Image 1 (cartoon, helix red, strand yellow):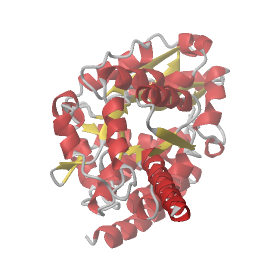
Image 2 (spheres, rainbow, N blue to C red):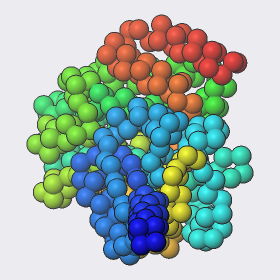
Image 3 (cartoon, rainbow, N blue to C red):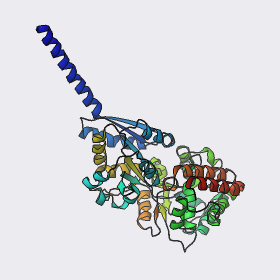
Image 4 (cartoon, helix red, strand yellow):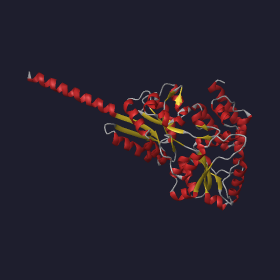
Length: 413
């Protein structure tokens, strides 16, 4: 009897142990985020606060470089995903929602009051009438520039028109200063140039039609975007060997005064040394055609829960925590962004404030960004074509013809 009782007792203990093990597994929350440079510390501060407020959750965060993240995310979602992923809004989010790979967050929007606090970014967070994203911060895009280098070249005011911009580039070059830095190794930085030239020349409605695959790449209006861009390349207004620089390696060109300007998102300000930031300011992409209403890029970063996530309960807890105004505001401040939550305090960084004034006074529309507004396959080919064009502008016609073949195949139009 004692032996049998002992066996029963041991069996009971084993069951309890197994149950506890299952609980520990269930309470493990796996999060993958894309992080560059100083962004990791900003992320970690928010996660540390969540961990302190939720000690029962075993939080496991994996940080991945931005370019590697873009390559790996599809595999994660399709096979064995973490419980939470960082990503981008618009078509980038819709691409995965359309394939059933994301958890519907519409109930979170209702429960957490996001329909009100995230009202301005609800459309790009929505696919087929449902929300799949918890918005974080968003960027303004414009020209960072060195005030001291402008003064050295005899430039007394920020350029408002394209002709003024070209004249300033000419003055900077004559003064022995590279007018424009561009980290063209990261192809998306060239996409910012395409976006703004297209938005300024052809307008927001045309741009969105092009992003949707409704406009041929051989259209004269598309070619005009590239020929306008080609003028800057032909006049050697960009830094030498631009295709060898990524975002992280281009910063020293501005820090050391080797280049005067760079088209980039406001997040870049957070990575600048204090001494350089004091010399830096920011202006809107100039007007090219006064008849075209001014439109801007304002891409939104998000968190998502994969459809196959193992611990959705705690994933929803994390999203609710991160969405609090104070946390959302801290993240945006650390990244040099505007918080998506309209109850969060706006950042006080001088460049961010200029950028967000631009976005808040944009009559022509706000785009999500080239590779966030269109199908991934087309975006990848388009940005590859931009790098080829930047390397050899004489190949423009053949590049556009090839992109048109891809458009017809991808969109069946």
